[in-house]
Length: 282
Ligand SMILES: [Fe+2]
Image (cartoon, rainbow, N blue to C red; front, side, top):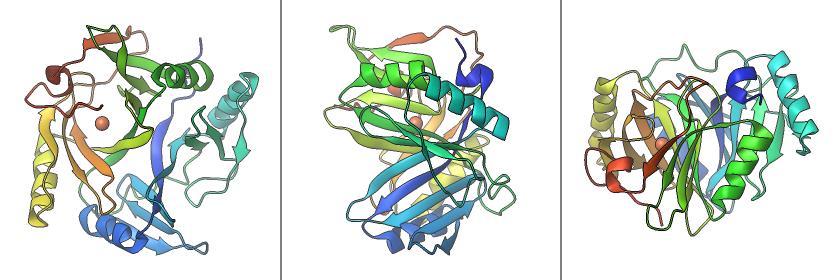
């Protein structure tokens, strides 16, 4: 079967956030993530930093409106569009200040929106700031199997690793890739359907140290990590932003060959953090 990885590799390129307090949120990402902001005509803010970008729209709630993936070329984008249409997935055209004309969005069976397009240049890659490429987004879901079915069989993601509760035999987590990186999307089984976190991939362990020091200066404490995840083998820590959305900084994420079979890990703290205590979603 054709997958995103083997036929139309896709990379996360920006997130579209809703915010009840957009000014505070914009200020957080400007100050702590070296992002520049531009007010947009529709009242949103466009934020760009080195290899990371975000749209923040005022709303009566805070959270994620959409995650956008860059297909790299119009040819790949039309191949993906044709494949999604063939598989019965509804497609809506969208305009985005970060994507060339022709971008579109889809909705998963629980209503999450994913945008696909071709990035306008490499947004912010030459901007000054600490290294951290927007790399993955993760959700909690009450319907894990249905989400895996949609993202694998309709969209074309590949399962890199799953985590299984050994007593019940139930899947608890699934890591999905859209190119050679271990995961650009993941789902945890939870009692609610909510945004779990997003992640910035740095160049090395010392970058994790420097990001930790930056948050320390503002008295923002890490709530998970530093540690190393089992699936993906990446070093990490997590903090929260001005709206209490969780964000992660990572290094050494596994590169996964297309031929590698999906792995299975037991649901235990060691899997989620081989260095210590883990945040177990419930
Ligand atoms: Fe993560």
